Image (cartoon, rainbow over all chains, first blue to last red; front, side):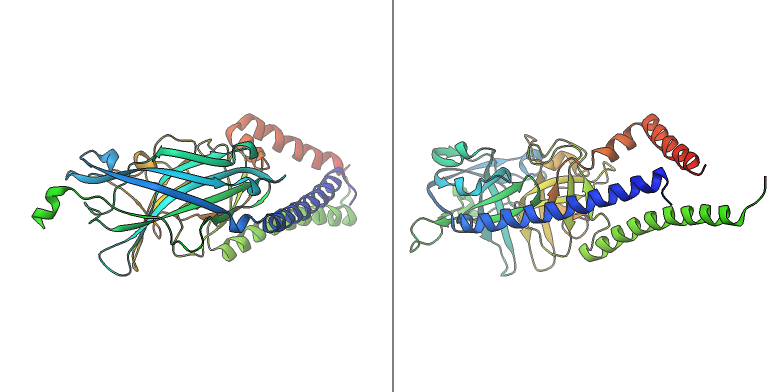
Length: 193
Length: 172
């Protein structure tokens, strides 16, 4: 039974058991550390949101032939994400989304306007003025119908080993509601309707 | 050469041991598959489109029991155009009570995945296309061995040869 192969098998199974135990411990400890450092109550301030509308007819902008409403925004953003950085943080993916409803009660939409990959604690303080959205946004339908959209700043922590962690920042001023804006409409769209 | 009953027993024991290890690993994989409700509970990253979050050879653990995915989730989906499963992040979601449409993008790609989808397909369908589920946990680099073995047939032959040879020699 003590052949070369069985020895290798024994060693490798012991090794993999240790690796599994060690990574579970690392995952749990780094999660606990995130709680302690207040990662799940991070504050942010998003303001000065100015949406702009353009009509697009190419597939790259969601059109299937008919002109499609495309919305971009300009915004200001203040947030300090440095508590997310500890010894087990590989990167933080931070993304600004807008959430809006639909024609029926059960429809919900969430779209990303802007995102950023942060790989070091030194870059984790965000202070953006007049930042332009990274993406041009269209809906499944041809028009956004001028709906209200609430703005969320989410983050996703990518660990060196362990669980992917997700969270959303809260507004600086806890009394104020979430930042929001109205999806712009084409002027003659109202006349047709 | 005489057939020794003890030798036969020992060889059979060794063969059974090998089979036990292989079937044990297979059972663990299938059990994970049942628990996470996905045919691929463990995924090895093949491309650099999600760098720096995921590099080639990193191992991802999947979960597929949620009926809706969130914006920001990293999902594994299949396309008819390419045969390999793609690991990308959800950029937009449009949900009703009946179905959910999703647009994805690789963190490291300049554009979203419209060009990876089938002809005239504008969104992924959560139920139909996102068959792999959502990435929940991560382990770096350990899957690189499988990439090396699948992409280098010579290396595969050498490794299999060495393990068979050592098995034969150890019986002496």
